[in-house]
Length: 125
Image (cartoon, rainbow, N blue to C red):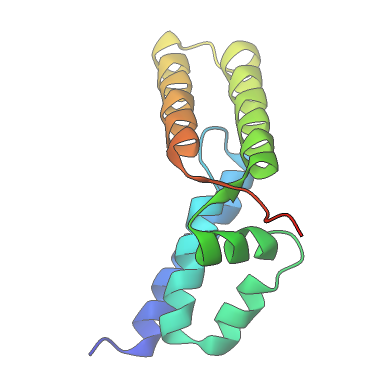
């Protein structure tokens, strides 16, 4: 049996990576927040409740946990933000062609991942 502290530590690492994904172009944040919630569920119900009810990304975690899907709006926002930052970084701040191609390639991979996640559609009342 794995001690709860290990689950909490791994969840916190994923939370940190997700937070970095907010500011680093090409690094997604939502998948890391979802992983963080999964590890917190096994390590600390209090932390899992906190991350699941967070005012910014809690709703995305809940939708994914309940439906294994992202809303179309979430997908559009994620890809728009990701590509905006990738293009700004690549063509304004990055002069090295190799690094530019790495960042653009990460964006393509991120786009493929987002497209392949099932799209959640709310049930009509």
